[in-house]
Length: 119
Image (cartoon, rainbow, N blue to C red; front, side, top):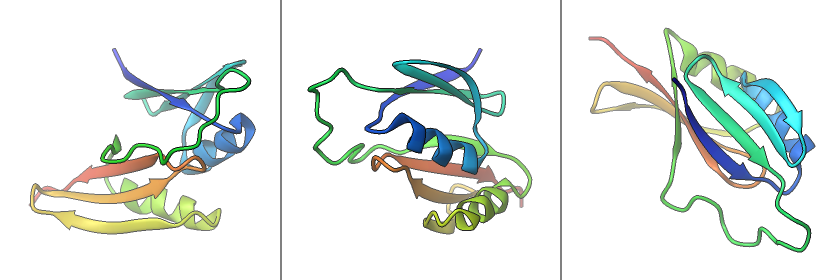
């Protein structure tokens, strides 16, 4: 069983390119939804809102969408992001024994990639 999140997007094609650049896999695209998957753990549905519905406000204030990565995965995602001109925050070593980066998608949603560090 996987978790999923639905994200409203102002430009589905641009968002798909962004997510695929980070390593997400497109599973299905049937407007208004695009179904993406992160490994075997999480699904993301990009949703194009109905005509006339504006996405004006800042997205996800106080919310981080978390995705686990394994063995050096934070560095892999960071390298993919940088190769596509996507800025990242981190990596940061957290006191709860994780190494993390944060990347903002084209609509401003913040994605948190988390790698457990065994000491």
